[in-house]
Image (cartoon, rainbow, N blue to C red):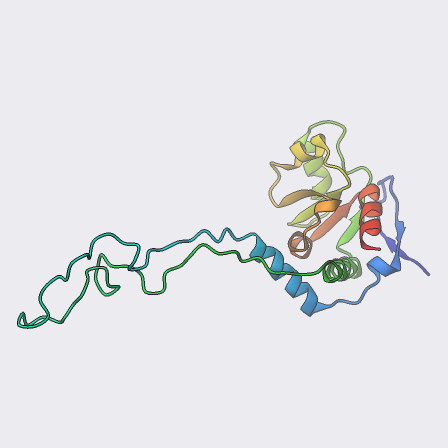
Length: 206
């Protein structure tokens, strides 16, 4: 017996679609999914933070006062981290937070997420979700029936009518199947996928 993704509603022309068990019938690998999500979130960090060490700040070319006889603690430079105008002891430097994850692990992780979404009835298919014209109100009424706060719509190719209709609706994201993000998948209450996008996902992950 095959696996089926249910339609968005009874009126949707897509109906329920049979999907490959090799993609949507996987067990949930929590450790791998966590690693995948962390990798994507880390890759989004700018890593541009920078602070000055004692060698970067200006001044301090001369000893502030003589070594002995002043009654004050000895000091060699005003660039010392203990001075108000000095450098930072462990200064932050620009760095990359990118983490490596091979393609096989990525595919297995995405399969695991999609399979769990299907088991939790958070994944549905819809052919009529793409509006015929740019109309936010029309799309908003369709999504209101779902009763979910965060909604992800996956399409095979970005449609201008859908993109412009959805951009002013809070917590609604539209992505192409080729740019599927594990962060968006796990954070969405409901994932709506078009039949064409579903076929592209299966081809990519099979």
